[in-house]
Length: 236
Ligand code: PCA
Image 1: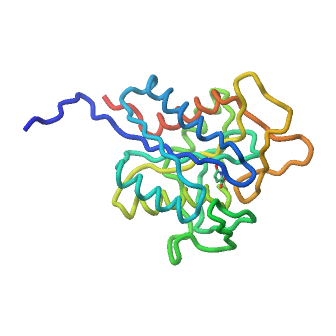
Image 2 (image 1 turned 180 degrees about the vertical axis):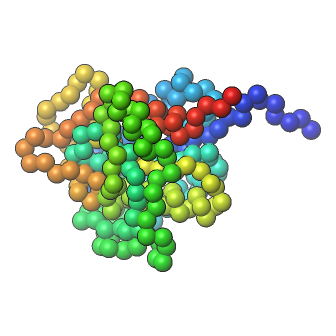
Image 3 (image 1 turned 90 degrees about the horizontal axis):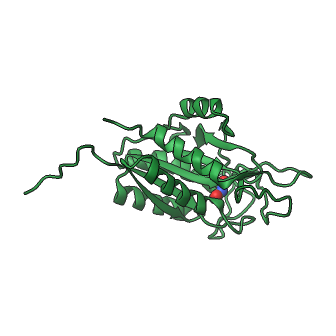
């Protein structure tokens, strides 16, 4: 029997993203996850980045996330979602045990003040190095913030379930959530309609006149890759 003899053990990052949902016909996290995976391949060849789409569904996302965690057995989990109306990348600090939104999920499920896990822990803090990444990225002039609400829609649900299910599976891994603003192609900030609607429950900020703020896709890709790199620092 031959043992693997790689000098440094490759570690695996599971990076999840979402597709469209009511008010968001094109979810920027599809391209961002792919972009971050590509950038990390160059930046951190010691990391193995696996991307997975999760359905924008309370129940469906839990099932898909559990399956992905079981299959991939990652060393870290970072989930991405869009919060239309925010103007910087939000490193989410806390998730609460609550599903409650004015919009339906993609399965037509509308929830009002329902626990994600009945009898479960009321909240979890992110186990990503939120403060350290925030300080470092802010000092480098990147558009980032620490956020203390991931909303009460499917993003918060996935953030909560990442914490709960990883523990249940005995995976003691850093796990957390990053909310991104609407994005634009580099150098092409548009003032026209992005076709997106901000939902407060989905972490969105509803503005009346100014339109929807956007960040260049490459900026957001870079921030996601840096957070991933801080989460799984290189070991020699
Ligand atoms: N944003 C939603 C769900 C999917 C997504 O990308 C949210 O913030 O809850």
